[in-house]
Image (cartoon, rainbow, N blue to C red; front, side, top):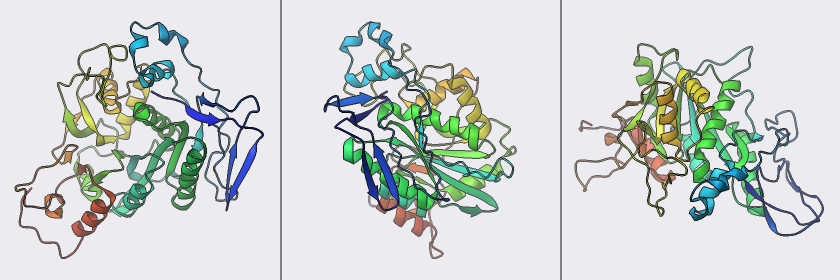
Amino acid sequence: MIRFSRVINIGAATFLLLGALCAVLNYSSDNTEIKYSLVGSQEDVGFEGENDRSSHDVSSLPRCQQNMNAANILGFSFLSREIQDFLYYRHCRHFPMILDLPDKCGSSDEPEDIFLLIVIKSSPKNYERREVVRKTWAKERLHRGALIRRVFISGTSGTGFERERNNKILALEHREHNDILQWDFNESFFNLTLKQMLFLEWMERRCLHARFLLNGDDDVFAHTDNMVEYLQSLRHNNTSKHLFTGHLITDSNPVRWPRSKYFVPVQVHESDSYPPYCGGAGYLLSSYTALVIHIKSMSIPILPIDDVYMGMCLEAAQLVPESHPGVITFDHMIPSKQEDKFDPCYLKQQLLIHKFSPIDMYVTWHKLHSPRLQCNVTV
């Protein structure tokens, strides 16, 4: 898990102004080489003014130090740099917030009755995906009397001016849409679990009263109207009961092939099996279950595969993830190759499907909600 960003130290402090944005880069006169930093350059990428919703004091948390004892693990020197860094910083759980949403779920005195909180994992560079998601399935609205709210969760990406630009993009979106949570850690595949844990920490502080959560990627097609109706149909829909449902995966094993994206060596996870879990592209859970996962995660070493880690936390709590036939995190099947795989008639009864491009997502959503849509197929 790569929990650091690259910082370029090249002189005295420099201030760059872009409209209402102010990004501060910290420099040192000692040398000019690129260095690793645990939490980045601690840039202030927020806005001044009464409508500013960002967290400016990103240096309030102490830097988490590298665990040098990790180098003593048997076989450590043969591991890739990424996995070595994951082991060095695996214990780091808390990082400064760059962008916060303190009033997203209402105030402590007047909390909003949020029925479904949509939590979307998104890299800073995925601007187009976020814009389409906002206009389609994650649009904040009421459906059948149920309030739907949306947040994107992100770290930082890139180095130097690229990192600065990516942070400014998120800050602009944050000001306009009030839907970005960003922490000062490096955005990477190895940090997806960290991102989930940081969100659950935020939820416990800011949004514990939300009833249900959709946790998903920014390239899924989520039929959130169907989700609300499904959740409303449950006997216990007041979040006091366990719920964790999606594309259930059982009898899964760690990938030991080093060239695989999902490679997990024994130095990271000794067991040759994984507990049951739901595919990380998208799943539904109650706030009760989210809180239980957050509590259990405090005593379970982080695994870089985020959906498997959720299953580990559920297993520790003696809770079971469930399968829902409407959640498909692998390619969905259609009756004929001559048919359009994005035909809304094949999607109208589903809850979530992975994976969609922004164009396909936008067109399909509007076709699905067209009053002229007529379907003669049964899914």
